[in-house]
Length: 157
Image 1 (spheres, helix red, strand yellow):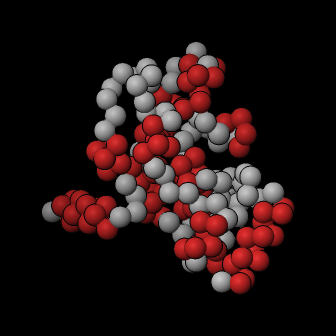
Image 2 (tube, helix red, strand yellow):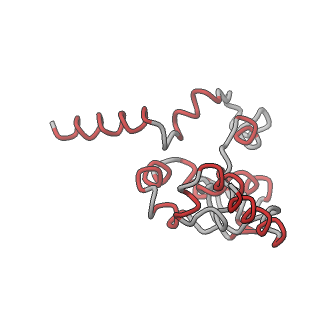
Image 3 (spheres, rainbow, N blue to C red):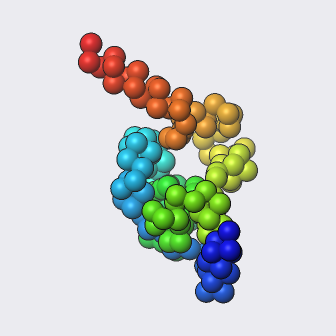
């Protein structure tokens, strides 16, 4: 615990507590291959690509379809868009410590964070049911793993 607090204090003093740089989805893939594959198949991984050429120049559209384009040079909605910049938590020794990883920046997305883009003012004008939509981006739970196993088994038949 003392070491965690020391690390946290050093990171805060260095400015890490304010904002962390992104490491990119490939850095997540190294340890979280299934989660990466689920993201890669999701609409989030192609969010900017779904925009017209005109929309890709519109800051209002990019604020949701590529929210980290200007500050992190990430052209779609990536792992770190939802989980926070991984600069300080991507190391395997940090990721193995559930308390430390959150102290240094890993975020658990919430309904509030999703509704920053998926809200009533969205041009799609589609209702957003957080519980149902969360199932579409689920890339970690045991239920997701069971569904993937069932699909793999079905494809063998």
